[in-house]
Image (cartoon, rainbow, N blue to C red; front, side):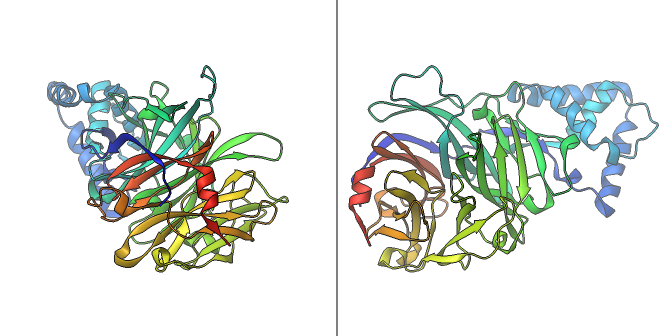
Length: 427
């Protein structure tokens, strides 16, 4: 293993992290489900005004202290689902709207089961920092009831001396708001952060049928376009409960997000990772097209990916079952640094690295014979034992700063000397 420094901070799954989200009854209300939705709405509107006030009072007494502006959340939920309720022409009072909204919401502990597979990028705002400090945004895969994965965020600062400080978890967390007016026919979904909620208190939930069972393993990258503009782009896996597909999250400010399915046969695979800029006018990605080996993909269209050419096969004992990327390639003076994961005997996961030629990323310049980090270096017990995994790292000074998941249960942080990683590589 490479001698690094592991920060004492650890993020753990926590059932106390709760958010209000849509109740599944109105997920995609149609057929028998739509009949049930409309029957429930009719039952509620038959209640007299005194009962409505009393029931709404009970709901607010139970939940108003646990969530930010919950009455506004109920009102927004009612507005979202009102076209499906079959209440056209009926007078709906303000209290009735809120109560109806409450019947189509539920409190969800989004990180009760697991917290894992983080990635990290530089924050769009680097102002007001001491020299040598970097403000960061972490993405986290949080897993709750029903093994549904969501995207959570945390902001922090890395300062000299390998110091890491994350903003405290806010007392209230809100789900990103689905922008119904901005949906597009190409399958794109638009969501926005609540204006009163910090990035660290924002969770992005599945919103489409293709995403229904989870948004998994976001690999964020700070992408620089040819005209110099910057955009934060992340590849992730959308899981419907029976099939997977790769999708793209895009944001220029972490206030508004677009989530769009990737087209092409390459999108049927997990683990796609985007290079942080074009190379010779083309976009590049890494992927694991056959579930075992690492492939290089290129495209003229960011949203359409086909094929792929074999880049690396398992070579060393710790990766003989499969290899894959551990996040977007990182541009350094020597080339493209690629973090890899390997799976060996007893399904033990380890993290290694490879170096690709900067001008021609199909050329592998070197690979680490031994892992940078292995599951045996950490607490091995957890939701999935014997796993260490990351979805992205950044260079800070002379170090590679890497957040990583342990046993799919918690997230740790390490600083690894970049020179030591490169020195361990072999052709």
